[in-house]
Length: 279
Length: 295
Figure 1 (cartoon, chains in turn blue, yellow):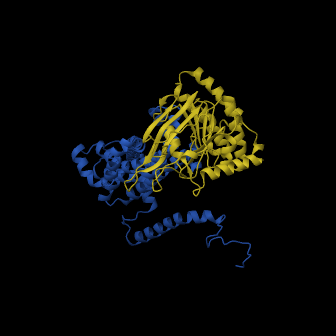
Figure 2 (cartoon, chains in turn green, cyan):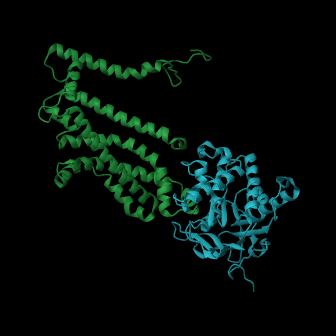
Figure 3 (cartoon, chains in turn red, green):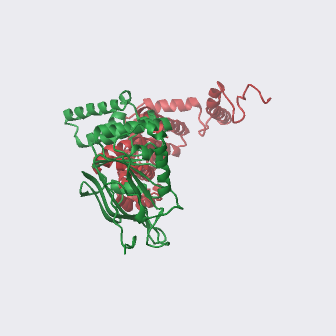
């Protein structure tokens, strides 16, 4: 290209301007994955029609439809929706609990000097405990019921959240806190009327970050001790090499996680304009 | 009427070497109701430390510090403050920022009282030409507008003394002059008592009725090697009323700035404690025998 070339490259270099090509670029990786899978799956079925490892799209669709619309003979439940409901409720309970406790920790440690001495080192240390390693302890201590699963999600997400939120509370300018007190606030009002409202968008952002870990621990917990749930179904299907169940479930989990994340981002962008304007 | 009173106040900070670092060295000061004191000083002289002491954010190492005769405790509504930034809540509209203070005191079920103070807040905001901005958020405002909100937010709770920490430091010259005039109007109208910290000598000499210069560049009888903290090296009356900005162009004004710079900002020019220009009628300064050998 000449030095005074009027046209930028569409694809190459740091000054590329893809224009309408961007849609092709965005879709390309998705299409590539689907095509590769399709191709390999078909080849395998030509060699061995009984192949279970890479089921065809129609096999997966049929199985999913069966799980989603035909009641299970023994439990009389629609397995797919029942699993979804159980998993989402567990995730919601675990993450909500972690959020609430984190907010309390963040305020106590981030705002009050004595609270900092009390809690800072403690949270730092417990955040190094590998959550899955204490799952056996949980199972022994609280049994295989709902509590242990919610506890695992809590333990998996809480330290990260607490540290993130504590850091944020600490970063609230000292000036703003002094200012609040000079406006006649009590310390209780400082917390409820100033710090918590400032913290809410950060909480949403932190939930977005920690939900990834939340899903991991949900599925691990369900895989180890459960009788329903998305994670349970995947681990159970593994025993029968039922890839026609596992793959649609993985896609479904991905879709759910993506949707939750998208909704949170939407709330953050629309409801807290001042928050994004600060950055 | 006496508002603020410092008596033999010292403030030192601990250091890693073990020997504490003395910042404020035997400070005496009385500020009366209605004064607009401007405080200047070279960087590192302890202006912000002094401000934090008055706010109650820090505690003096020794000496007494009172507001209307009561020892300053932790920060409360007896003092108002306007900072250069972080004065406003980013999550609240202009009106809600201004109402924060009053609403801390009036519970939500007292609807009439809240409505009353709300009208008053709008009235005040209109006075500083922010009538159209009441529903805007701080990030939607210019720097000058933000500081106007911050001033109204601080004075609506009627503090005994309004502390201002380089409030116009981040503004462009035009806006700055506008804000200075506005502050003088508010000061006259509401009979405010203000301590205005700035690093700009011109601003200090223009705004204040009384000029305080805090500086570590002086000498006394404690010997060359003594690690002195800062003292008021100048405390003098400037003028009794708000002035027009035209005064900034006069010869006399330029001379005043030059004098102050020489007395407080020149590390080579060390005045002796007994020679400070403490000509203001409220000025007083008790020296220890070590500082000044009278015999």
